[in-house]
Image 1: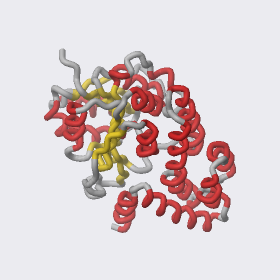
Image 2: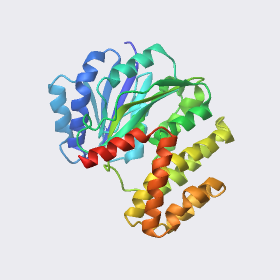
Image 3: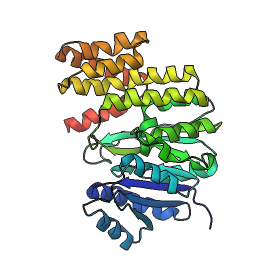
Length: 334
């Protein structure tokens, strides 16, 4: 049997309605690529009607595989299982509430068939209700990188998004993803290993993945995306990631990513005392941190919110992500 070029693995737990939307969007795109793509649902023992949703699509002709865990093994272990059990050359772990933009699976399979990459990163955008009406536009380009540090900086926070990154599993034959459980960021390890194992990696600046906004939680954002992520990135110096690459990644996070989320917390009245300590530990040796992020968390709430709006605006312009923010505001006004 010929190995599939791509495995799409969907971990899910108790989100049947979102999974239904995900599969509804995926069905017409996969029908054209049955010889190249396999789709598997990894159900973490959901107590809702997840199994009925899967059966509905199977009855409609969707050639799905379905793995039902006998108990809830946790999100990390389920994501690790998605990677370990996938049989394709490349693996995409797709969030159960994330959607392929129309035509993007066609783009992806063509890219994977025509080139050899360690990691392929697809740009994503958030949507509230209708991912097609809220789509920021199709323009953009595909860029190949030979330098892993430049690539990591270009990808930035997308390195943490399971649905954005396609991993070349054939380069990680002896990797057991279970060893990365307990971090909430199993996928980051897999992504870093893949990009460091290949002389060539790809990022597309077009929007290919639509992510439902405000549909996850249950963790401390700064703990996971500053403290834990920082430790993971640092640990890969021993595997070939340069100090300069880590520095560029930190700058990307400080300038283009963290301001928006800290701004949301300030506006929401979230206590910043714990955030300040974690931020200092990670970024305190950077001068930029003190002039760009610290005013956001130290100023009185409304001044901090204003500073957060300013830094978010300029940070997104600097990293070419203003269009997504503009469409977000436009959708809110509508």
